[in-house]
Image 1: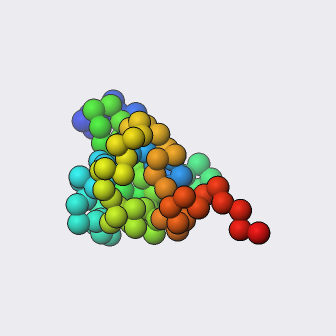
Image 2: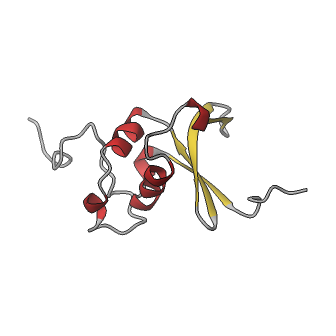
Length: 108
């Protein structure tokens, strides 16, 4: 017997590839953040242990790698920050360690 979600495409997402759509799904599913009970551990193709949280759309199951950056971004989530971006734009979600607008600056 196949699991009910066997037809779903499975995608592993690193913070660098996080899109506004996936971030919104995470915040909706885990409004108070995720805890150890929500984290899934598995081995990747390189036999490394990966920890992730899961969100699902109609056709895709996303496993989003757990990181401090993910937690900070979820905590500071504001839907308005992403209104000028496409839902699938991985450049929309900014690394929380960078100051806004500092990505292209030269610090010489």
